[in-house]
Every structure is written in C-alpha cells, then in structure tokens.
Length: 590
Image 1 (cartoon, rainbow, N blue to C red):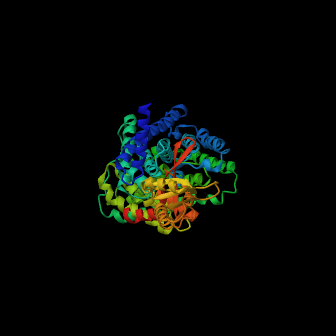
Image 2 (image 1 turned 120 degrees about the vertical axis):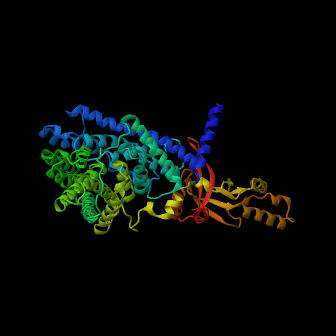
Image 3 (image 1 turned 180 degrees about the vertical axis):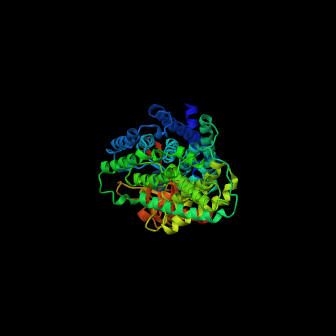
C-alpha cells in the first residue's frame, strides 16, 4: 500500500511538471514512449495490408492489382465502398471523421482528445480502402492512428492538455516516419501541417518520437528507403526554366485537386449509398483499363522513377488518379491522400521531363529528376507545406544535389496553388476571420501551458456566514482568495480577496471596542464585506490557458476556480486563475 501511494504522488508530481511551459525532460520521455507505441501500431497496420495481399493477390503484393483479372480489379472498388459504407453508414456523421483532417480538428477544438470509435473506424476504413483498390494512401490512417494512440496514452494518465498537444505531434511524426522511413520529414510534417508552429519544447519530443517510430519500423522492414531511386543530377542550369514551368503545371494540378476534393457541398444532397456507389463505379471503370490508378500507387511511383511506365500510363496516373482521389474525398469516403498525391506529382513531373528531353535532348535532365521534383512539388502545393516536402525529397532520394532544384520547384508550385487557386492547404478549414485558430499567436502561446502553472493556490473555502473566530482562523493560513460556498448550485460561486476581509476585521475591531461582548459574536456576512468579489465558473485542472481564456470570454468573467478530482466521485478546488494572471503570463513569459 505505501508503494502504491508513492506512485500516485510521483504521477501527480509528473502532471504538475508537465503543466509548465519548460517541462522539456518530461515531454521528451513522453516522446520516446509515444514513438515506440506508434511505431508498433504502424508495423501492425502495414502487416494487415501485407496479409491482405497474401490472401487476395496472386503475387502476394497488396498493390499488384494488374495481376488480377479485369473483372476482379474492376469489382474490388465496389466491394470496398460497400464494406466501408455498411460499417460507417449507420454511425453518426461525427464518427465518420477520419484521417489528418480529423487530427487537426481534434487538436484545434478538443485539445487533442480523440474518440475511441473514430480510431476503430480508421483501422477498418484504412485497410479496406487500400486493399479494395480505391485510390487511397496509408499515411492519413497512419497519422490518425498514431496521433490518437499517443493522445490516448496521455488521457489514460490524465495528463494536462498542453502535453496532449505535444503527444499528438509525436504520434503524427512517428506515423509518417514509420510509413516512409523518413524521420526528418515526419518531424517537419507534424510541426508544419498539424501543430502549425515551431518551438524548442515541441521539437525535441517530436524528434525523439519520430526516431523511435523509424527504429521500430526498421527492425521489421529494414533500413532501406521506401523507394529505390536512381542517382540523377541537374547536369545543366538550362533545366531551371523548364523546372519552373513544370512547377507551374504541378501547382495548377494541385489547385484543381483541392477544389475538386472540396466540392462535396453540391454532393451533400445525394444519399450516402449513391455517393459511395459513384466512387466504386468510377474507380472500377478506370481500373478496367489502367489498374495502376488503384491503391496507394507506390509500385507505380517506383516504376515512374525508373522510367518503366509507358506514356499512356503516365497520363492515366495524372488525370485518372487525380480525379479519382479528389472525387473519392468529395463523396465522403474516408481515405488518405498523401500517397496518391505523390504518385500524381511524380507522373506529371515525368511527363514534363519527357517533353523537355524531346525539345532539347542535348541539355535536358533525365525524366526521373523531374519525377522526383514533381513528387515534392505536388505534396508541397496540396498541403501548403514546403519544408516538409523538401525534407521528404531529401530523405527519399538520399541525394543532396537535388535540394537546389527542389527548393525552386516547391516554392513555385506552392505560390501557384496559393495565389492562382486561393488554396491555403488541403487540411485547413478557414474561420470567418480568415485565419485558422492554430495559426493565431495568442492561442498558440496559451496552449503551451496548463492552468496549474499559473493559478493561485493559496485559496480557502467557507460558507457565506461565519463568526469572527472562524474568519481569523481562515486568515491564519494566509490565503489570497476566499471562496464563498453558496446555498444552492444555481447561484454563482464568488471569491473575496482575503486582504479585504482582514481590513474589514481590523476596522470592525477599532469601531466595536465600546460594543457589548455579545454583539461581537454576531456572524459576518461575507457578501456584505466591502471589497473585490469575483464571479467564477469551474474549469478542470488539465485545461490549458487557451481553454481558460476562451471560457472567461464566453462567460464574461474575470476568474475561474480550478477543480481537481481527488476521488472518482469527489472534486476539490485546487486554485483560482484570473484574467490578469493569464495576461501577465502572455506578456512576460511568451
């Protein structure tokens, strides 16, 4: 029993340390654990896909749809949407939210807390969509599964919400790292796309998580890169204008894809079964002739980089896979889009490279170079994440010489999609102010710390009516605030400055020296004591300062009392947080 109590005290201390903005050692420990957990989950997810390939594909490869008879590969998408629709159709719309968009939404509006039902649905939809031949990737499911698992670890330990945000980033980075064997790109993706900020306290645990995710994946799948990419060089600077032209084209393709994927509003009137059936029929129809558009497309991507695909297949990948992926998203089928986006970009880049080789064969670089650049440019333009795309390009190619043209290609494609098509990133939903909440500096700063680090702990509670002796005993503990317990729950909780009560007692003592002793025993009504009183609402001890700030604005209050569950059915007040304390922290500690 003593050891059990000691462990509880240690965990409680760990929580208090995490509430502070400088809890770097504790966050790094969480990053290690969450990276190992996410890496194991990603290995399990990839093994499920491999087992599916062994069970259904003649060659055992879950992407080898070209080995199936035409009728089989054309029927698979219909079966996939039937299974996904049967699983999700009877569930509420909130349970159908999956993937990276769901991760950003939960991080923005729910402090990184994930529903278990959506997590289970992601396993089913992720496996079925890839094995069923839809144009879908595994990275979106990997990010959701990793982020939710890491956050679930924090929720189980009842950690403060500011640490849940970091755990979500850790799970995201480890998911990307374990899927692609790209630990640096995983870190940058988590900070640039999901967290939308860069901080030392955020970077270090995310780096550790991404490293552990890659280590776990390499223990099972080896340390080879995701794609076998030939060694290519720019050869001549005369290729730079053509690289700019290719980036412009890919930026336009990215804009078309984003607008197509977001055109689901006019499809909302269709019943769910009709939308899913349209996706199955369209995918099956294209797959009848070009099975390369099915699945993630990594086999097609590898063949594109090595120059093994015919011209008509490359065109089918650019047009068919782009339209099918956008249509699938617009119709509400939950899929990952990062893998298909990479394939479309690589195919478009290869086509532009082939055209350049035909126009000036004496100076044109290999089409494989343009395919690599197209892959990074498409990812950067769709996600509006140029740095993550560059890091992915570097880690996938293992070729530092490609960074110079890669930087040019990425910047041009991002600017094209952003300025020409007004695209602000595939996963970002703009607010009416024009800025996502995660991009607001105030909310970013206040989300890094929880209320225990700022709240005033010198608080006592008492009834409204007390005697002079009780008042003196209250002040003996030297509190800053005195909470008034009301007679009914419908009355607001109030706080009185302890200094005001002390001043009142001194003044009464000076004026009551001539009064009879029996009058000195009259109770004191704390509501009648002159001084500052604050009306308050409750907030949980795990909440961040951003949650407290939003609640203060929503209720029009100046203070909150912090509740902490001391027992399963009992709560105690552990402190008070005021608007002034939040503003002081932001002004002097940010």
